[in-house]
Amino acid sequence: MVIEMKNKIIETLKFIVIIVTLLLIVVFQNSLSTAAIIGGVGVTLYGICIFLLKDKLGYVFTGLGISLISSMAIYKLDILPKFESITFFICLSMSLIVILSFIFEYITAKEYKRVHSLEIEAEVIDLIKNPNTKKEFYQPLFAYNVDGEELVVGLPGYIDKGIPKLGDKQKIYVNPNDSLDVYFEKRKNDKLYMLAVGLFFLIASVIIIITLFV
Image (cartoon, rainbow, N blue to C red; front, side, top):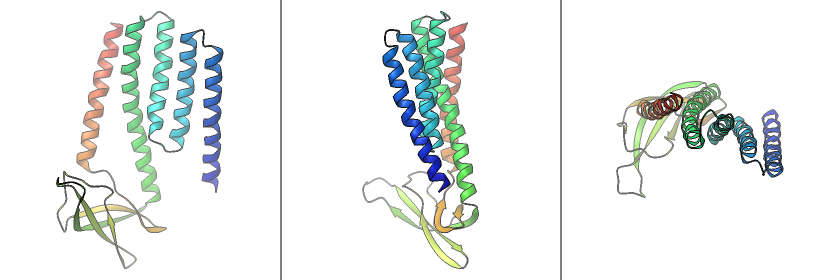
């Protein structure tokens, strides 16, 4: 009940942010830079709202909004010319989106583990091939035991790399209030891939931003 009320309040705030932002943009439409900064503030607040609703797009909107505000402020203060300000906006957006995505993933994983507090070792009992493709995509099925009851759950989606073998063990997180509500932690290979890609874009963006001011 409390969560539903909180979500309703956030949804209302999200709607107010959209309306107020659009109205202010119309009012200041003759000043492109001012309207852009207002739009950036609106996008940032909108991103925070949907972030609080646990929507992954939240960090994207937040990053874009903060970057738009910063780049337009730098342009208005004549710190960087127009083209460099656009480059700054793009690079800062990528940097913030990467950083905020890492934060979002950490918070989400922590929240899931809080709800799914029962750690259980599950065993792979079957591999179901994806019937919609000729490629080797499989969905592992895991068997686990809760209070003497044998249960089976499938890994969300199909995978083609790092496919486990029958009999392999994996730790899963189960909701104590619903034994069929299971959380699978991201695999190490997926974590390393996301980390590598994220760090690449982050480092490249930071280097470009530094060169803009040198």
